[in-house]
Image (cartoon, rainbow, N blue to C red; front, side, top):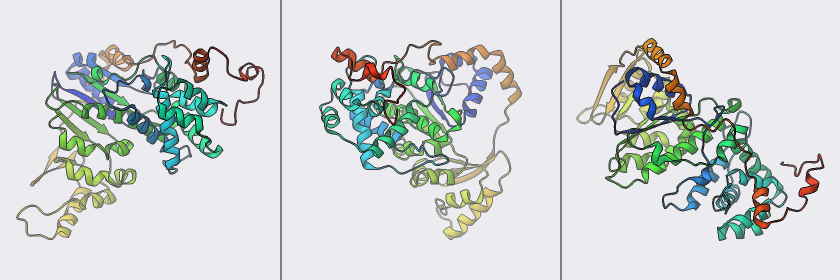
Length: 418
């Protein structure tokens, strides 16, 4: 582990949590002072983190883009056991987008994306949200919309999983602070996104928050003016967890990243995982990233990767022969041996030795600094109750909503989705 660049910042997105753990240990061993510059975003930690999306600085970007991003990610979130995708309808995305647009433009200091769920489960939720929104487009839609029961149920179930799976996630999304990437990814800073311990082991929830954090952070970096700022490296492990985010952004990173001082390291345990997550990501990665480090792969992974391999310049050999040899070589690489592929060259190397016990001992010595890094963005131990959509509506109109008094004295749910 080389001495870190004092100006370079880093964004690390880790789908399992082991990379973030080793990174903290490595800093403790080689550069303990760097631990003071590390922040860990973990939505599944006991105290989660401060991440109110309604307080996200947009930097001149239209709020409609944020609403569309959130709608697409929530709509693709599967609520079926053992399933990663249930299909996304255009009507569902449109409904979620306009509800999120209304939430993001609401006139209240306590607004949060949880109001989107409130709007679906409250009896007059759309009308209440319309009264608070400053978006004419969203307000007109909410006042005239009459979605079917099935559409309401589908949207609310996805919102409940994404935004209200645990109390910690609710507190995170309704915190009094939003993402501050200007500070978190400033010169010499390291932002680690650790989504390796999802609530209840739900991989869909892990993929959702990895995608949200990665999309917002990468979009912030890509929006930086060319020729300004400082170098930043984007490191993504288990890339299949954010495949939907990467396949629309990796080409921009590869083409304009140099002018914005961006570099990217994308890692995955197999190309089949990437192909299953996105049909376009593997060709985009192979076509736009000049350097590839390939370890031992399973035959199916090697076969998929071999489709992107061709004979080198001046080599009189059939493409099929080159690919067959590549598959045979890649499937039989020894442990810790990698193939380095660059334009016009191919070579092998063995990874450097790491004194893991020394790293772990250093982590124990600097345990207080590592804990501080994990808690730097954490919520306070005691958080006030969030402001609900109904609370904000009552404060805005100066009167209680209809049925509010009777709702407190009955055991009947407010709605079939509440």
